[in-house]
Length: 312
Image (cartoon, rainbow, N blue to C red; front, side):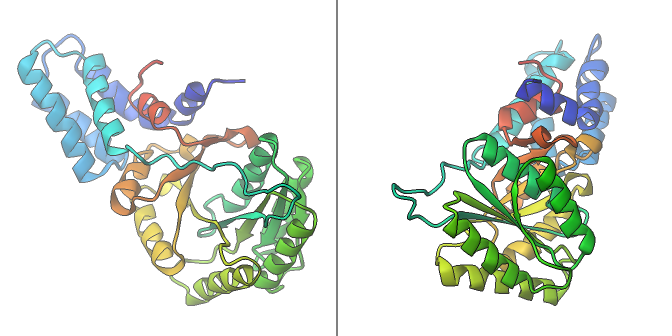
């Protein structure tokens, strides 16, 4: 089993290549100058760290260089990492233990995954449920993306492969009705958690927002606190465009956190920083590969070290 840091390093290879290479190769063996700073600035912007974070990192490196003219790449990378840790303070989402009580009288803890098509939401639902199961919790998965037959079958395939319990209906079924059935099933079977995969039509479409609101209303008839978690699943390769998605869904549905997928295939791994600065939504998990175990809890220290090519 790879270490968590190694997973982050492997997953963020493309982002790290753009940044770590600049700090280590451009600064190594020669004095910091305008061209090397410009190259680093370009790499940070390309990775979608945004204006504010990029400016903070560059200013810290410049100040350090004024005090130490022989500043090398590894030292510059460590400075950038320190700035990034400061910016991301508090951004780690933590899923605490389930809300089960003695006697099994508690309601299931509901995690509702939302987002646009192509974000990796359906596979994330299965991977998340598997991770919860590995953690000793009993889980039911609800296939509430009834708009696409492929989504239901994809989730069915994943849940069968991972030996997970699935509640599903037919294409075109009322998504809120499926959520209703899934909650009742999870409650009756004494499950700790219910993970709901929702439809992912474009976030500008009002019917999607209405469907999500209906799912919430149905759940709250059972449990006024449900869903306890409403997480937006975003494609990390979208970069800054994901911030606008997050704003719209947050305004319409009231998000409690994020899952960022596909970080293993993008050079724009800095989008996490922009969303955190803009909306202060914690990041619970990140997708660092195709396997079930490649959905990992977000860890600021591992993320920062991976981005800047630092070792443990």
